[in-house]
Image (tube, rainbow, N blue to C red; front, top):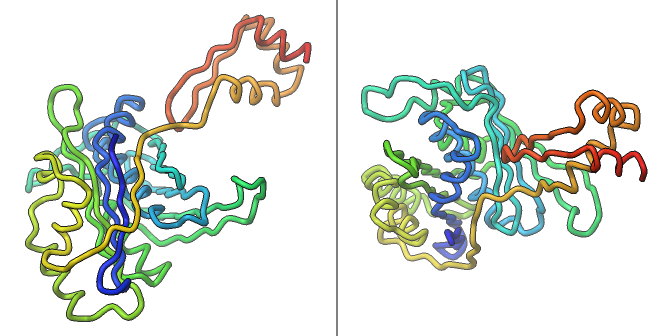
Length: 294
């Protein structure tokens, strides 16, 4: 299983998170059948969402929502404190030529718009508190820069964010994916900040080291260089959705008897597809009759 780690450096004035998300991204790409550039965008969003929620134990769910005017139409990632993540794009098929440097034009496929972070708590204990919502304009559409801009502007946490997805021409199309997030907390030494910025500037590309077998701890070393750090916790990460056949039945039942009767008479059944994971649930005539009988 892949994992996410979080820790600290410099007496807690620097917070660090890193994750390998190759399998997570593969599963998302497989389910949504995304084009290469959209695959890179979705993988970065899922990874960033996991990292942002890494040390927030008090929140049950963290959602990153990108509403944009680019061909992808929008991207959503949702993670919980147990390390599961799910997500989707509005338009999985758009493709753009690679940029002159050979990298995917993720910024082009995203375009302009807004970057939202929604934190929700209380679900585990049956409470439904008002969610916290933060938002900033999209600054580049390259995703990592947008996470960093959100943290600096909305939460006043200067941060360095590295997110990457490496693709290949044969299945599984995702060769490597992962990310690292460095957050400067109050009291962080200016000299240390400069050191970290310089280290990141000269570091190899994150996906190349993941492709060579790097662990999350190696990604933190790549970003911090000679600065010592302490790992405070780790968890497994996976792409997993909380949809189910029972939820599909409940949702169709909530449409009302008249609608269910119409499905039964005209369609001899019903089907429902989950937007988050693209799983389709098919209800038979018997299932619909059971809804009506109950």
